[in-house]
Amino acid sequence: MACGCCVKVCPLNAIQVYRGLYAQVDEDKCVGCGRCAKECPATVIEIREVTA
Ligand code: SF4
Ligand code: SF4
Image (cartoon, rainbow, N blue to C red):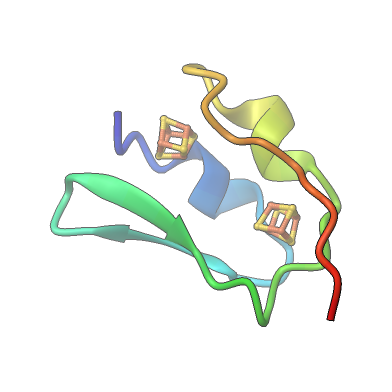
């Protein structure tokens, strides 16, 4: 929905909304805290494990 709720709550500034269309996470910045997923009204954010 590109509402920007996830962008506001991310403590690492790891999420950007592009062209008002979609949100994208910078995986290099993300620490997996899960705040964005809790905040997303559309529940489209999935926290997954990342292996180096
Ligand atoms: S899980 Fe990652 S993208 Fe989401 S709020 Fe936390 S640091 Fe930001
Ligand atoms: S991922 Fe969820 S909280 Fe983030 S902009 Fe899209 S709808 Fe909003």
